Amino acid sequence: MKVLVLGAGALGGYFGGRLAEAGRDVTFLVRARRAETLRRDGLRIESPFGDATLPVAVATAAEAGFGLVLLSCKAYDLDDAIAAIRPAVEGGAVVLPVLNGLSHIETLRRAFGPGAVLGGLAKIQANLAADGTVRQFNDWRWITFGELDGRASPRSEAVARLFDGAVGVEAKAVPDIAQRMWEKLVHLGTSAIGTVLMRANVGEIVRAGGRDLLLTVLQRNAAVAAAHGHPMPESFLAEYRSIFSDAGSGYSTSLLRDIELGNRTEGEHILGYLAEAAHRAGVDATLHDLARLHAASYDQRRAANRLP
Image (cartoon, rainbow, N blue to C red; front, side, top):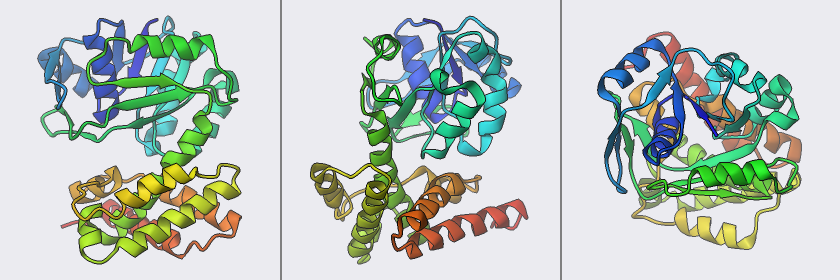
């Protein structure tokens, strides 16, 4: 199966790079400047599972002939991404998105039809350094996917087999991807609300006395998910109560890293979606609204070139 990876940033660069390292037929669809860098220097990965510098195939325009599109763009680039990958999808490729949040799923299904889109999520902490290196921070290395209607399918299993032998990746096809995406939104939304409002990682918030705030947000997010048909298992809640109580944790979010780096954020895609879902569910959305406003105000200031 030929794989087209949209972008060679933190997620696309890592998972696509590990597929290429394992000998799979992978092409990175990137902008001209990134293409030039990749052709000249290769794709560089720094990781606890081993560093790599890989010669990779690149393209600046999509075409038919691919079986899978790994979609790893930022949510605010989704419309451009849809236009960029359309030739590959109309040529028969299935789309595996690993964006944060949930709102992109319906956008993709409207664009390409329900049958062309898998559900997917990634659990990894990585970023793209200024020199173009993909840096993985810890041992999080999971990519999970499946059919959104809950059935097992040969194509999901075929995608899972692509990752056989890939270093530093745990890939799994599951029948309950919608539930798992809600689980990720609950814990990501909790950490995003906390880290954006407090401009600190989880351990720093806990040490400052913010444990109860984080646990309150976790409980409210779980209530939102339950109201939308996806109750959180007690084992999940116990795990994340522990994580959000850990004074030594360095757990942060891409939202906070984007703010600290002066980048555009995915605030509306994550915080906005959760806030609206909380209002629909009748859950206290005070903290959701405040975090959404905080991120939106930052984006306004950034757009006005008023960042320090």
